[in-house]
Amino acid sequence: MTIHKCQTQTLNFVVVSLKGRFGPGQAYVALSKCKCLDNLFITDFDAKNIKVNKSGLKALATMKNEQPLPLLHQPWLNDKGNSLRLAFLNTRSLQKHADDIVNSIYLNVCDVAVYAETRLQDDNVPDQFSHGRLFCANAPRQHNYIGGLAIIASTDVVAEQVFCVTLELFQLLVVRVSAKEEVVNILAVYRSPALSIKLLHQIIDKHLCPVIADSSTPSLVIGDFNVDARQSTVQTDVIQQVNSATHTGGAILDHVYWTGETDRIATEVVGCHWSDHNIVAVRIGDVVATAAQDSSQVNRPPSTSRLFTSASSRARCRRPEQTSSTPSKSSASSAVPSS
Image 1 (cartoon, helix red, strand yellow):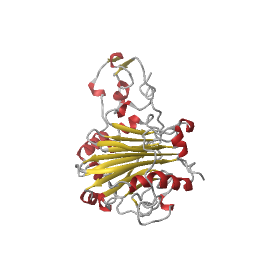
Image 2: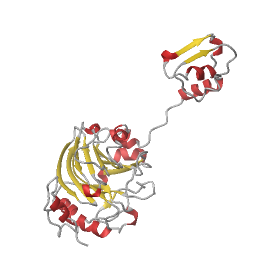
Image 3: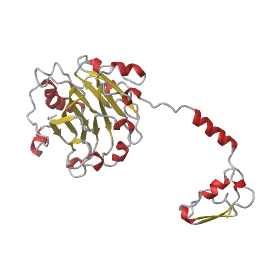
Image 4: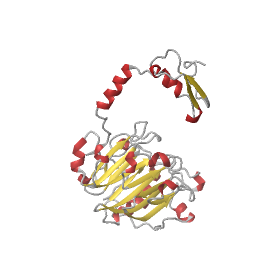
């Protein structure tokens, strides 16, 4: 068999004869066909037949001398402890994409990670996340576990669960975190596209608004609302912080709302290869200096968008009745507003 004929094959046992005339790269092709080095045998060895293409050598030298291409989103990656870094992603199954998440350089550096559409059941939390504290709001069994939320805090973050709602088409998970001189209430949200906007507003008024109104701690509302933020009704009291597409279809489906000082938050949208959603990277704290390093990648200041009203709703919102991290079946079902 000639070297040219076996070029696309991988063989278990190979005897290579280097006798004859060889072109550049042919010896390499012949020697690289065997799966196991122990099963590779060379006869008629002649060093003169191991030739390298001169253009290839020149290109290799050029690559060695060139500076490596810079990574994108340097403000997020290079933050030296000035801010609390939080990432959000609709991951399309936490179990299926656990390795992808662990190997992501952008998700690895965050202090807190929030995932939607986790599709977890109580007994299938991936082992890859055992190093941090994990809080879950799983979608109900009757909805085939489609949906769900998870918040994972790194070991140097103090975190405690405050509140949880698990409805068939809506999940809310509230966790208070403290790290890097920042204390923040994280309100993670997942809304199924099957839930109407009218019911969404009713659920937000009943469950989300009271959590914000009853706490002096700044709140970060973050999640997959499955509605384009650019098409929602504009209000000036709560600012929607993301102004770049978070979905491959071009919509801003993943929203960030912040009740704290507007100059202490910055967001970036980072591409993701395993989901049809992008990563939303959020920094809270001293973000002004690092944001100025690359203003093209940082979304500040954003447009406004209303999905809940923090100020006007405080007077009419009461403390939520259900504060358990695992609501009972009866309390979860009764939390669905009537249409």
